[in-house]
Amino acid sequence: RIQSSTLGPLRHWPRNLRIDPAFATHNDLEWIVECSDDIELTAILVREFGEGTEHYGSINPMVTEEYSEPSIDSHAELKGPQYHWTHLRKKKYTEKALYAIEAPHTAYIRNEEKRV
Picture 1 (cartoon, rainbow, N blue to C red):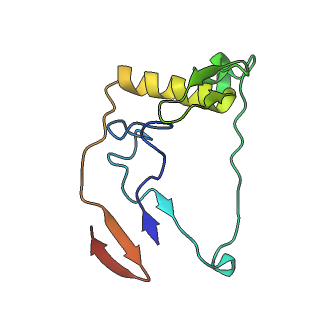
Picture 2: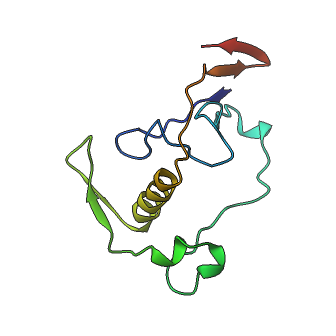
């Protein structure tokens, strides 16, 4: 089954901003696999941050472990490099006007296409 992004708009990623420049919408970004026998892991993504990571892009060297920001939708604090990286990406995409377009969501369930 394929679904739109489940990243919470208040906590992780705004709905009006692209998650990736290659995707104009948030639709069809996540694949739900209900049976582990149906998949085969072929790669894993690891991000390296901090000094000496310029070859991975301009944002990675700016990421620090000490980052912290209040969460909009809860009383928790968002701490750590993963949130700093996300914050810097959102800022960069906003500056580049990489806004997502609204489009009807398409759900694929067992080879059936349904517009939602």
